[in-house]
Image 1 (cartoon, rainbow, N blue to C red):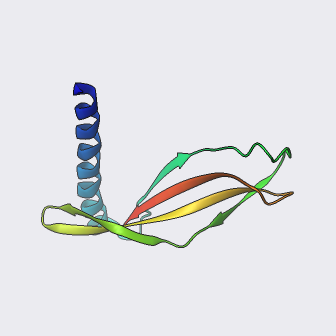
Image 2 (image 1 turned 180 degrees about the vertical axis):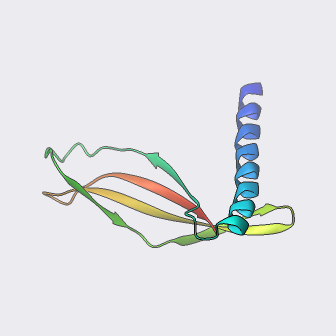
Length: 100
């Protein structure tokens, strides 16, 4: 139970630090890319091709806000699909998060 609480606290602290960093970078360099990429691979057992792949992107979706020192930063996410170049099958999906 203590390990779970430690992990939750670590994630909360990371988001707090990210929110603070976002506020600083928005002031210093407003055109920087503030994206976080989290990926979970689930490889397709039906595609037997090897070789090149290509990516397709979904639109950015608003998923909520992160509040930092009374200021709320909007959070957006989109899905990046990596597909097989020969059959177009989705090999795995990556989720990107962006704080504006």
